[in-house]
Length: 163
Image (cartoon, rainbow, N blue to C red; front, side):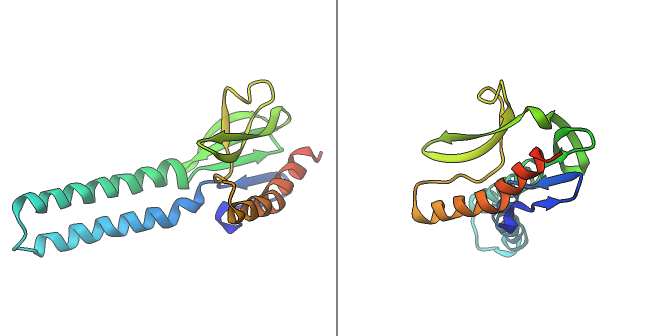
């Protein structure tokens, strides 16, 4: 459950639900760098293939940067001092989502996969924020979901419901 980067203090709880994207981001970034490093030295390669390779490398690099900024670095901060839940982006840009007492946890399902999400009690189906990976119906996924509920969801609910 290290992939969620759960951190609990007496007044704050933070979770990075998309941190599991990091291996994919690293692979794409390394592949893009390898393309940019080795393609210039391949003199036998056709002009069109060379610039197609640069295009593929550029797309991979853009994808990895975008995924890092808008997914892997995103953190949800549950703050008892301000009684608020924040979505913290890269460079500590905070966006207040809701009050702690307005929060509810729901199960959302898209394309057959279930995720846990937080939302305001009266608007949870209009605007919600996923806080877990997608879980399918496989045995392995059911085991991951059980671990998630035990190691992440239970402490989160205890933190929010404690005075």
